[in-house]
Image 1 (cartoon, rainbow, N blue to C red):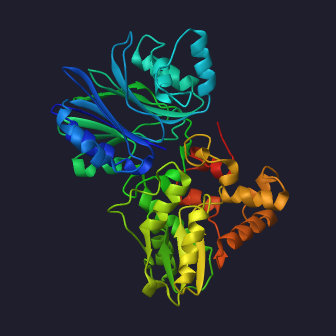
Image 2 (image 1 turned 60 degrees about the vertical axis):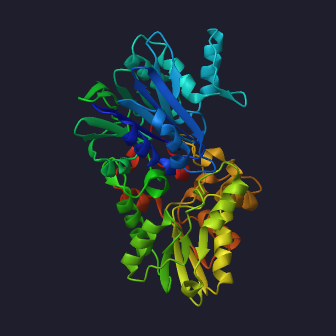
Image 3 (image 1 turned 90 degrees about the vertical axis):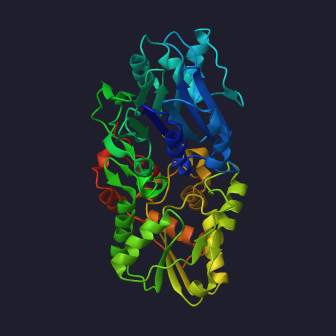
Length: 467
């Protein structure tokens, strides 16, 4: 997915920028970057974070950074932020999202005899493309608005000039941006969990398509938010950090409610409840509290030397890292009927290994309750399941087994409680060697979040798109 953090201050902002960006490390897989504006111009640093932590990569760079304005980014793919020279002036830019029409927009640029310098594997850097679109207009705000109009998919933007910071949320609000305030400084972030320990309080959540300009004295709205919202539901289920809020709704609160909903629909006899660390824990606590059964940690996570399993890009290495990080506790497993809550089942490969470990360590039964429905449709708006082929999704693998192809009767398979839906779930259960498997109902997930369904993107589960 990726995450953004920007700050403008009356004093040096580098420490806030460094720690604020670091608080977004759970959102990205490949690169981190920071840029500051000062009297000398712009200074920038970009590092790979595939095999190490953001802090350890960027701490040696901090002495060279000075400035009262800065932006940081954790990126799924491209190198960011970029420093761009243009008729509008020099600026730094960072983006989060997914440009589905990047090839078409690139072709239009080539026809105008324009070129791109930031390429990887023959692909146009999406952030540079966004910068080009911004520079096609006579003002930054007009350029940002133009870019948002042309992009199909999603794109939230931080654009830093020598005078301040533009923040723009993508036009349907799939990815969040929130402004924080403290004495003498303002910050903007994807995750407002980055605010409290830096002394910021949440000021306002940007609406879909809204554009604001921020300096150390305050912020000015440059474009009003639209009335159409499709915020990603998966932010609450998995992506988001437990202390963060989106649309003023806390992540951990929603996960507890998801777990509670799973419990209300369940009658399995168990000894205890556990969560697959880390994102499954909030769901499991909600389940345990609702059922009045003990919450335990039969898997504990070892992180001092292992970066998060969200990275690196190579799936085999990612699975290895995930396996090495989860250490089983035999005393809590042996002789138990254990129910696990998990945020979701994407591929199921690593989960299958974890379940086998439970039985190897003496579990009598292993039950699984994912906090969202079966993933059927790859994400078209972020970089979650979109980075995998359709057949990587556990649900689609089973559909191919049952139908001979993976693209048939999808709506029926996605319909909770239908004959095909139950057949698919049972086949997934068999593959994972679970005692029972039951998924969250989409209506219950929507209710747990607390927004009307038409304001949520639920494409991964039902392919519905309202706008």
